[in-house]
Length: 126
Image 1 (spheres, one colour):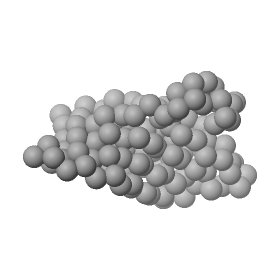
Image 2 (image 1 turned 60 degrees about the vertical axis):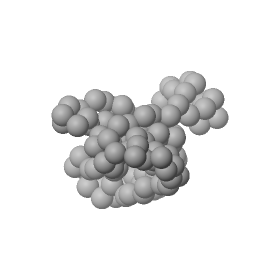
Image 3 (image 1 turned 120 degrees about the vertical axis):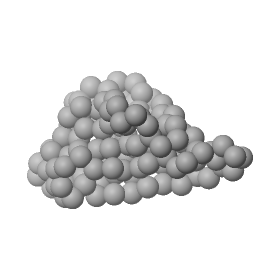
């Protein structure tokens, strides 16, 4: 079994549903962080996040979460998750386990506003 710590980065260039990460074959992924930043200097932007299983069933992780202009949020954080609080109210991140062939997808309200960084531990099951 091999363990690899890595990250995946993307800018959501459209408002279409976009694949961020696909778990490899014979791999389990422990997603430690999903960090979203809004690069727009004036406008907030909503983001929705989904986990799609190997049967193509989509499970909502976030629905239209507001990311304020020039701000970042940790989507896997625990603690006070009220939209009007800063990340200072958040106590820790809660890892998300994804199985072989599962996919993390995101959708932004506006293209080119949001960038996302996913930090993940990939555990090869062979």
